[in-house]
Length: 199
Length: 199
DNA sequence: CTTGCAACCGGAACTGGTTCCGCTTATGGT
DNA sequence: ACCATAAGCGGAACCAGTTCCGGTTGCAAG
Image (cartoon, rainbow over the protein chains, first blue to last red):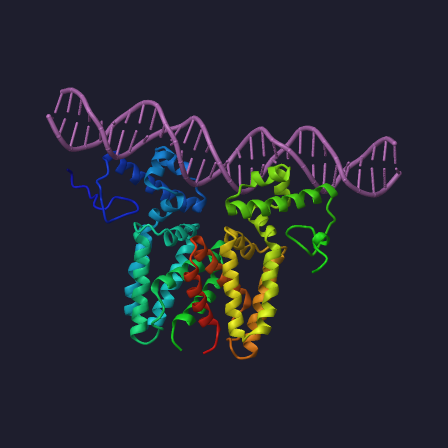
């Protein structure tokens, strides 16, 4: 047992780690690396076959680990999404709740638009109700944080659920991200915020 | 009702009718008929090849007329979407503007959810900016009607653009339609309306 | 009626995601 | 060290959408 950190290796879950076989773990690492390179280079249009070849494995191996292309994308960007989530409390501490909420929303949309095709992955993440996908829970927590900060100061209506706000952001990503339209996204965020905030 | 469709036969345009060759017109009719049957039977999962075979033409013919599956879906349901648009003025005349707006929105979402996969077609319709697609213009007009009825009575904020509201509805369709979730759609409409309406 | 040709047609071929299955191998128990 | 076996592997095969192109044909001008 060499001191190699394999703590949470499984791609789409976290609660259980059944230890992965050594070669499988190596392949998973290579796949994620190849995927990151491919998606960065070619956007979401990068083909899974190329990614598998680049990683030196067969497509079967890729699909065993990542049951769909969307889930591969999700796994590839999980870290960055996590950073986004982590930023929520910081924003909430640094500025008035309404501003923090807007700022985070804009970062969210910007992120989804930047990672081309991330929106489709997001759709899966937000829609698929197998509870294994932690990403959704993390996002919901981040939104919840910002939202409760706002409600506790009377800046937001209490009836609004974090999950719904997250879904709304997903919807905005899906239409505004189809063709890069930052201005549309901003206006839709305005609309959404007016529905959330008091006054 | 009106003398039906034969006048403007082109599938995705209306401004210009360059008269279609007789056989081409016949094939187009058959394709739309086959598509309607197939989509009704199998949902949006119906394969393009089956539709072409059913219509007795090759896929090439289908693709000449309908450059993508989404556009075929759009053409197939154009009439029904038109009915939806036509309902807007009636609703506006029959009830207070805020209620009319909500009612129409719910019909819209319901329609998109019912016609499985229509949401994907909608994404194309709303996103594709080639001005040939009249459907988007019709939808925008319908929303505009309801919206201006509301603003003229002081029920809605004047800054809200019809196109943006339409996009928002598209976004709601895309997430709530992924997996049938009528309740989510209703809550998101509430949120949207609160952003649009005064008070 | 003949003829020229643009419009049209069909379907084979290509692309990209996903599944399937026979073979290989890491691993833990003996 | 050896074996049994479950986990893993590769890539051929499959299916759906889309493109391409050589052959066909409606149409109207002569």
